[in-house]
Amino acid sequence: MTIVLPPGPRAPAAWQTIAWMARPAAFLRRVHESFGDPATIRTYWTEEPMVLFSAPDAVREIFRLDPAIAPAGQSWEFLRQFAGPYSILLLDGEQHLAERRLMQIPFHGERMRALAPIVAELAERELSTWSGRVVALERMRHLTLEIILRVVFGASGDHERAQLRDAIEGALATVRSLPWVLAMALVQRDLGPRSPWGRFRVAVEHFDALLFDLLARRREHPGDDSVLAMLLEQRDESGNGPTGRHVRDQLVALLVGGHDSSAASLAWAFERLARSPEVQARLREGDPAYLDAVVKEVLRARPALSIAPRRLLEPVRIAGRSLPADVQVAACIWLAMRREDLWSDAGAFSPQRWLEGSQPNPMSWIPFGGGVRRCAGAPFAEMEMREVLRAAADLTLRPVRREPERTKRSMLVLTPHRGAEVLVG
Ligand code: HEM
Image (tube, rainbow, N blue to C red):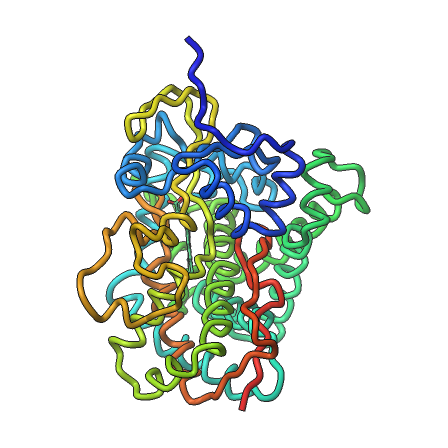
């Protein structure tokens, strides 16, 4: 018996892909209004149709799916060339859990708290340069990469950091640009160094050469307290250390997971704050609970990622609905946090909602996804946002234009379409 997929837009996949990339929030809102929950979309983003769910019970079921039946690694397949075969992003099952245990250690508890002063110092240095018109997204990309270079790569020398920064920006530039991504989706082959895939390959080769050089130097002179130093200390049961390739893939996973998503979330924070003078005034009072509420509300009202997808290898039932193999099923992060039946005045930016009344259903606040794939850097990301917003509390921010910035997609993340333009001072 053929299983019929939930309804969804009939427009061709090409059109849905353009809406998904250029106007993702408007697209998701329209799909939800027209077809309810669940709904099926078809884009070039994934080979298979994708069924979106946003009700808390369905979201919980998705996060609890057995990874043997519903792996998440395959959703990152398009990044394989950069992420590498040992990447936590691409693995599933036992191998994935083993990588995850290792990678989470520095981003939790005491170790993570010890990183906060470094993040605070870098944030204060960055924000002290702000005056006049600032495009927050550009500055936050710079800052979050600086944080990763220091904390993760342990790159302390100016020259070393500048070289790595250029190589990383080079590799990410292609996959951040909408025309290039569309070209890569259409022509799925490397047609030489000037073609989209060719440019990407050359940039990744350049990045790899620098990184392997850095690894060789760190093995010779170990001893800082970076995440890289910790990764190099890993030993398997036979006492063998990790290969360079393995450590390289772990570093790239942290880079891909932690750079653009944090920068986008912080850019949205500035976009919202500039339009909310009363929130800026409360932040200036320095109440840590209010700061935390602002971070939670930014992540709810303007999530950096729109979906947490899993690919079905076997038929399953979710929320009483049968789904066949060979479709993607996704907890729709954006919709779950925008549903009027789950959040009062869902479209409003209101940190106050976190300080009064009952806490939301945990399956309706899901900016970091969930289950065994939940963001490995979530506590670090929240700490990073708190430190940056604390450092920004003394600035007076105004929007360059009154109307809110709409949402566009940049590689995996949702960003303000003008990059969060603010006037400072
Ligand atoms: C506000 C910033 C961030 C947001 C909104 C965010 C969000 C997410 C989401 C939605 C996922 C997929 C979860 C799922 O499929 O259920 C994810 C995965 C991941 N994130 Fe984050 N993230 C952020 C920052 C970071 C940081 C700072 C790091 C590391 C330093 C990081 C590392 C990762 C990794 C390694 C994964 C893959 C986990 C796995 O597959 O097991 N993220 N993140």
